[in-house]
Image 1: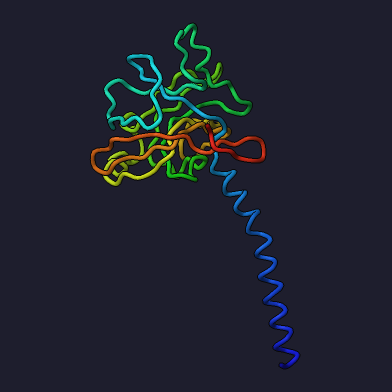
Image 2: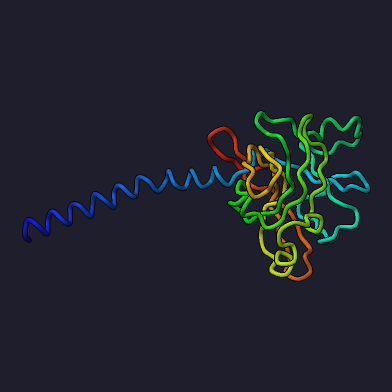
Length: 198
């Protein structure tokens, strides 16, 4: 074996070792970027009751679906339990539907709604696929698939140019053509790590 071949073999081995040390960091970064800032809860807007994970809902849900920051109590009281608190730097919230991993990239959202104010927080925003009229709802309904659906607190009102400060969402599975859907909890960020919601 020549000195040149030995040197090249050592260089390749060191390069491979360097890439192996980066892999866990990349995986951690990807997981953290794709996690929600807090869990959300879905409520039937007509019966004012909690919607269970795994329930099958229609694309154009006749009752309407609203989101809450906390579980829906039996005594609704003043609805303060539902409030998503104001966040420094956020001036609006936008309801959205995105492919997993694109929750914080408004220009890549598949569907979105009108921006709303966040001065006193966000209380029970209406969010379901048939309600989000901007973007490409017909394409999402036709194709089906797995998406993230929720609200993003942003620093502006234009979906394409706003920056996401916080994102609260659930994972939905849409049936192709019918648009019926179910939901489950995504990974939720906790500080610098992420955990699955119970």
